[in-house]
Picture 1: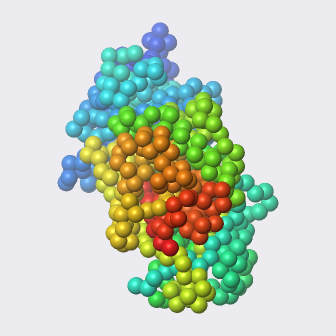
Picture 2 (picture 1 turned 90 degrees about the vertical axis):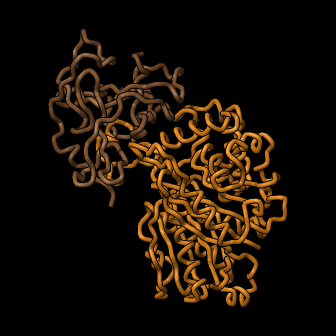
Picture 3 (picture 1 turned 135 degrees about the horizontal axis):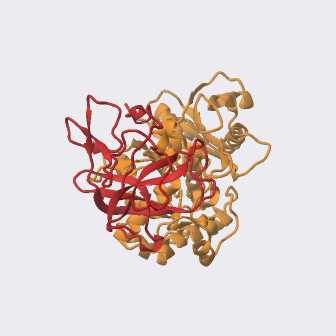
Length: 165
Length: 381
């Protein structure tokens, strides 16, 4: 049976604390009312980790963690890894399901191999498209990517080149 | 197991046909296939058919006649047509029936396919944050492959250039004008490294094939084209598929690789014995990777193959002789059967300006799609 992920959504939206170290944020203009795009995807703080699910029997790690506590235990994933592949999203995805801003700016997407764990798909931030190279070192960040109707800043996970832009 | 022959083939032109439903395009194809075989609808004992977006295929009896035949609906994503063919093939090979039809049709709205997370057991945020696009998957798969195997952007362009040349010579194709290499490479970037002219579009169309036992095919005097293998396979561990929030570090082969192996084993021949091939070309990169996944060349050799024109209709292994998905568009339910239709035309020597020049005796098809399913057929004359 396919894994389901309802537990990642049942508490959404909820207030989410973001503290210093999110490189994409201009701290002279703090993020108003940040909320995570879903619950249980990542830890907060200046050094955020994604949360994967480890199969208790085989040790296989998947992201996001499936809604099956009997079989999967939540584990923090390594923050750093290497870019496995990438592309640029050049047109605005259809809505639904996309909820990003109406005014579209192309963004980078990639898979990052987190050593010993899993290869994760994510947005790539704070990098010039021309500088993207397979194998470059990337680190996990939290990225405000749009604002909801209530004025909350929706935060998702992303990767940026290690050490910032 | 008895031998199975293709005794009739019909197609409704691909592309856009205002005022004609997907189902009606399927019925059009069946009528053409019946005429081709010299049969009437009432002669057909059973059928398998499907569409992805145009409703239940068994309602086709309203168009063709209420003869009471057994009809099974197939809905198997991009392998719908290939699965319908497998169903009809199996019924005759098992000796249950002497003559049957496999039909596939579709009519998709304009623009890219729009998938919703809930349809794939994925969380909503995956689509909300802009990660749920098939175009991203294709781009990232070929981007990694190009880096690892030394494939150039020019080679991506050459695949599309060939497709539009072949499409111009195929009556049933949608894109009927050649497009030069510079235009292809310089056209709007959709998802790097793939430009607009390197992607196929959702479209409309219908295809029908009439299959018969050896006895029936002889009776009809149409015992020339035999199905040597028809295999459908789902994904093995570690394959890279569309809509994957994460991948295992330990990588595996694709469903194409195992479907191809099974088909060659069943047919008792190898890739080097194939004279003409139709392989899944959702975008230019897919054709390049599928050349190797199906066993026609080694990884990286595509650069030389395309530069030398070895996959053109006058090359050593012509590939996608009617322009493939790039020139015909992709009505999901019909696409896999279009490939088999084109091989029937080529094996009969009826390809006109796109006829391959090597007097083909063996022909290969490969269809692939979400969520990791591949279908392969091998025909022999």
